[in-house]
Amino acid sequence: MDNEFIHKLQANLDLNSNFNVTINCCQYDDLSLRFNMFKSSESIDLSNYIVEMNVLKPDKTIYIQNSMTTTTNNIVNILCTNKLTQVGGKAVGEVVLINKTTKR
Image 1 (tube, rainbow, N blue to C red):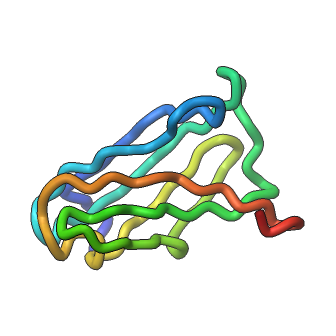
Image 2: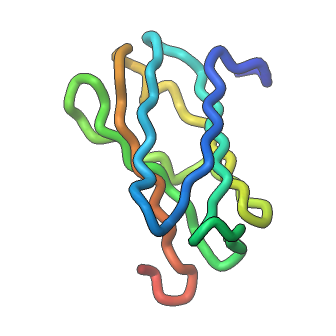
């Protein structure tokens, strides 16, 4: 896989509101996701969190992306594997933050 992604998605997500994301993709798209995370419109520091993405794929199966994620300050970058796009269509995902200390 090279560094040119067919589909790039960027979104601002606030922890005090619904932070589900809709991803429209073609079969076997390479996806690069970037989220700016906020709480009450203030940037949050993600250094104490593990980030994963839980997605309901178009075929109604669950996909969990918990690798190839990086965080810098309040920015989350996720390079999705092709398992997410084995079936094209609309997928609905949720960004999950897990505290590194409490594991919640």
